[in-house]
Image 1 (cartoon, rainbow, N blue to C red):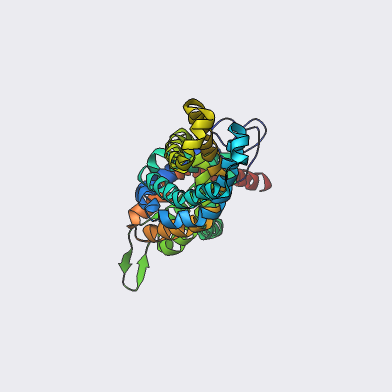
Image 2 (cartoon, rainbow, N blue to C red; image 1 turned 45 degrees about the vertical axis):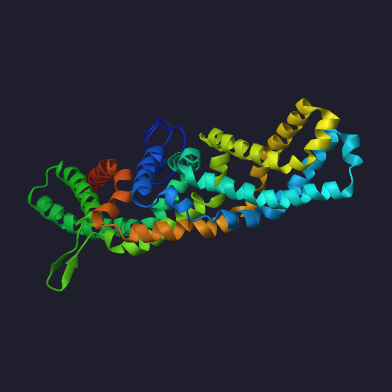
Amino acid sequence: MTFRLELFRLKDQPWGLFGWQGIIPTKAEKMASVCFDLMTTKLINMKEVFDRLDPAKFSEVMEDALLLTLDSIVNEVAMQYMPKVWSNLPREVKDEVVVAMNIESEQFLTAFMDDVKENIDDILDIKQMTVSACVREKKLVNKIFQECGEKEFVFIRQSGLYFGFLFGLIQMGVFFVYDAVWVLPVFGFLVGWATNWLALKVIFRPLNPHKFGPITIHGIFLKRQQEVSETFARVNCVEILHTKAIWETILNGPLSQNFFAMLRAHSIVFTEKLVGGMKPFAVTALGSGQFSEMKEEIARKIADSLPAMMPHSYQYTTEALDMENTIRVKMSALSYPEFEGVLHPAFEEDEILLIFVGGVLGLCAGAIQTVML
């Protein structure tokens, strides 16, 4: 009932006219928002993370792809604006353009990535990216909670047997003394309610460990902080916070206009330097007006082409950002109250529904017992 996906439900509610949707997928947007809001304030700072990128190294891994693209763009635009002049241009002059490409392309990418690092918060909304991914693919929210709380969900299932048996003994004793028709259904509701309530409390309470002689009492989820931190970091970085998703959000997300404005500004400066050697004969052949148009066209094509080259940087970017290790280490170092606050608040308000459902199921079981007796 927590995870199952069904259709035809009421908005923001797990039940509906034709079925039930798991509580977690029903609240996917809200849970993801709470969870990742805490994550971005407690676990990761995108400015600090992107500061790990070395612009020179980034330029190096992108160099081959950029040079091939630049060669194609310059040749295409030159043939478009001055085909005869470009075709008859001495080899030495064209070689000068190629040399300029080699020199300026590295400076272009280095300066551009310095700007990206400095203004990452203006071009990437990490919370919007993560929440959108979870709303779009609700199974991601399920996966995060299922894998991080795998042992706790096993405990909840098993606790129904342990706690239910103990509370059931009390129920049986009362029924032997007073066998009114309402006793089993009412006690069934109380047993179901108390069983689920106690199981959920044991998972997250007490927040801090308490020693009683050789025995230490501590919330079973909190005792697994190191293990959960590793799982949480792995699942998030494999499914949501991976390099491809980050770049796709930068390129297509709500702040993409800032990124492309930045890219265009750097492309114009780069083009000015790139075609500087062509200016004397190009202005003579085209006039200053058309030469300016040609520069604009080259700059536009460079800005349009660069995003398609980004996959060449994925491996280096993943290694440099080191997101998984960062989240794992930061999460492992949280205090127990802070650690609980990363995951528990996301579904805390719906615990009462889980407890109530346990009570209803207990009531039904009690009613069936009454009929059978």
